[in-house]
Length: 404
Length: 165
Image (cartoon, rainbow over all chains, first blue to last red; front, side, top):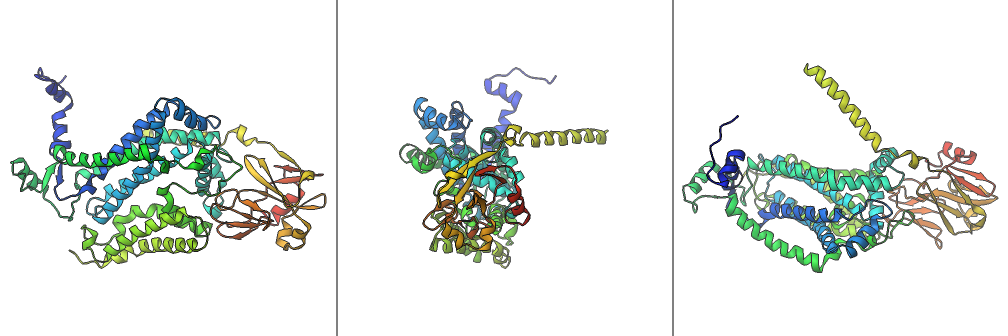
């Protein structure tokens, strides 16, 4: 039995048992953030808050949703939308947050690429972040199945068919994933389980790794400057906060972070209350029908760029291109051969590589939404080839970069 | 001691993985989906009939005399002849990613709206991305009745000669 003194306050009582003062120091008061950053550094907190919103709204939807092929559609579109008090609010919040979270993820990702925040000790942050992207994609897809509308059904059909691996015709694998020849009851219940349990648990674990991986290399700054955190921390602690290049995570940095979050939430609730329909495809308000394919099947906006990489090619090549697009971002820290971890604006050719990549992904996203006919096919093909070409060229673009 | 512990735990892990794999297999009640009988005597020329078999749509198209006389040998090899009439019988799922193509009566062909693939009236792919013709389901001709799910002589011949996958 360890020795315990009588505590003089509630704070001390918890500190004796949980080392709360040490936790506070390590996680907040003496966790150092560079001063030379901008609002883009708040996207992590914006994502954390959005995930929290998804979790809370999801809990309320979960209490009335029924994962049954006969009742799922009505439990969402009638029970939750019309009977449950404020059920519509949880649904619209959940749908808007699921869409907007990808916008923030893409901003967060391209911020990291622009400032070189995936190199020199930050590789695990990048890889865990890309795994979070995969987990969020799986979460979005499995959630899309649950209302059991036409888009749920046909997206489920098309995406699970990808696992037949083209001409390998591995239909057994597809039937195993579905638990049926076509999406049916077994399919709906297992994707329900994935959506509300397994993938959220994986996301929570990955968020833990993502935050933990940030601890030792610290967050990057606007100039990629290498800071001596011990020296800067001493300056700060001795009261010379103006000369120090760092601030404490809390309350200094958090107060600014939460300001950006507040602006974001105004935008978020504006969408939720006045412009939510972009997050709810009208086709999905028809109940699932296995004998009628909707005229156009397209994914939600955040999957359009990779969908457009699949589309212009023959089946097998399309699948290879699609698989390439899914995994290639993970390899970025190793495909970038340059020693510089500075903003793209100071990196020569990489600057053009970055802006062409960003612009091309916007083009791919736009083309993915348009019907596959006429000039669209050509633009889509050129964009897809450019995307693949840019990644193959990256090691050569960065290899000869001068050290700055 | 460590090895023994590892071996026991390993056997347990493999067993658990196998149980998990089996739990995701299609249920016997799903697999035992029976046969579908289609009466073809009511079919009208150049009008597509869609039947359901094991949850999948089956296209049944009675060809007109014009269509039969203008088609290639590859097309004819896929024809199911019932009571003297030529039929296209195929699983109505695009061989690209499984959407259901729509039949265009004026052009006597199928268009898949998902990715723009096309098939002719015999179900042979004519425009990318689909990589292969529509699949012909196991069938047997019984008078004017088409039995889906049972492999008859005609189906076996098609399968052997590689007309269908």
